[in-house]
Length: 246
Image 1 (cartoon, rainbow, N blue to C red):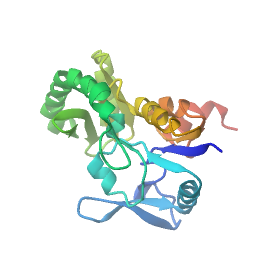
Image 2: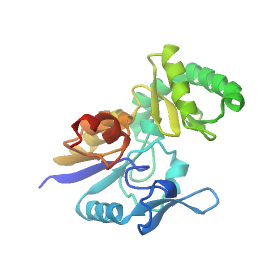
Image 3: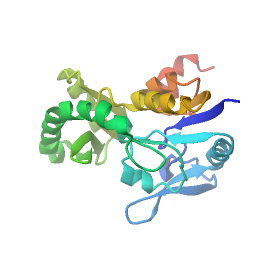
Image 4: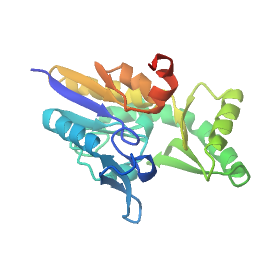
């Protein structure tokens, strides 16, 4: 029998912050902030689905979170882990696979000047524009730039429009969903990581893959799986399924 492998986006797919949880519905803590306070939660439906997947298959997180932020998720993931929007892939033992240094690091290295340039530009305008910027890295290499609005999410929509109009380098890509905008590196995105990990797992025998995600930028990795699951009222549903609403 083939193994079932679930490639699972986390935030707004299997857990979310309190304001995004259904009102008056029981929830369970699923992630904490840096101070150890509960920050993200799971509904009963999410808890049941994840419990079923963990019992029946192998669950691999595919997240924009850094390794540090993933460690603050209280769920247990014992197989491969994909973080930094796909730029970091860790084996079950926590180490980077040998091929990461040959296949992924060169792409990150080539994008460093551009990432530093965009990081400096965004940080220069952050206070006046109303957003905050963080640059994330593994070892000494920047992996992506994260931008979050201080108050109004529309700030990021305007910023995204400007970045697209500025002819963003072909080496870089944009992720934008609500109060999250990220500049990532092409070739080391989620779908690239899922493809690489699936190939590793297939060496051990046949697998059936399920992808679960909420953002438009999750679609490429969902399309690479045998089946795909999309949460209700997610960005994918609201922006691509609307015309099919009854």
